[in-house]
Length: 129
Image (tube, rainbow, N blue to C red):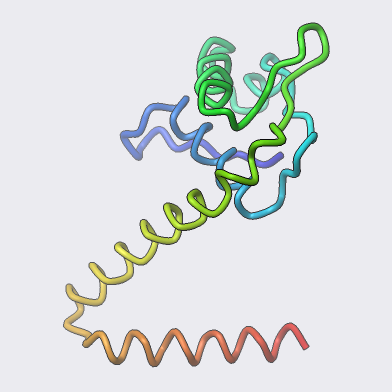
């Protein structure tokens, strides 16, 4: 599981962990039943306090995204499928908002942005073939 923390974003680290775990699930990189790294292991990888990771895991558990099995670990919940579409929309909405903001700052019309999206989609399809 790859999580990257940025202290310059101004977003609390535990929230960054929560967001990235949600993203990994929504993107299908974490599946129902997959085990998350133990708190201490992830804390060491990220060089953060274990309490920070524990807080993130607790928030994910309260949201029904993960379940804790006492003495066994933390796993992606079976209920994650209900959250996935909502999470995908949330992730894409943030990215679309950022794209539109940048386009406006660069004085690029919406029609040009849409055209560029279609072009990039076609280019990605070609690469995938």
